[in-house]
Length: 116
Image (cartoon, rainbow, N blue to C red; front, top):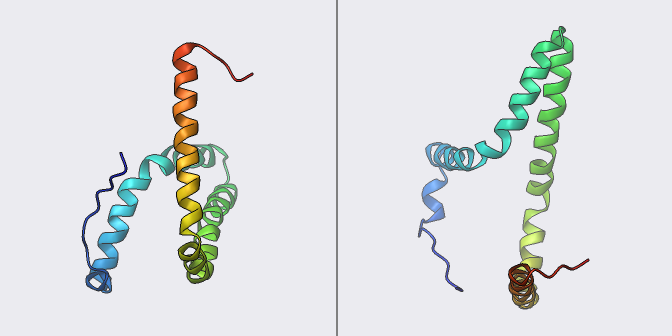
């Protein structure tokens, strides 16, 4: 079960605007099911509000809520990656602990046992 499949893509090829477009296209395809329902609800609600200004406020707040985490992540990504490289041994232990917990919980569900 400890297998991982990845595409071997060289990062240098995506340093162009066309490469960035394709990365964004793939990201959007994988993320659309998560954003679609919320954005659709906001669009419907803002169209029924009766005021263009109210719709702009709602969509602006939604856009800020989406953009701020990305901007924050872009500021701290280098230091976070250095920290993650140093602590890989701890992540292996966490991975084993979570895997064992899932196996135990699955066994408890099959047997009809409850935690509470």
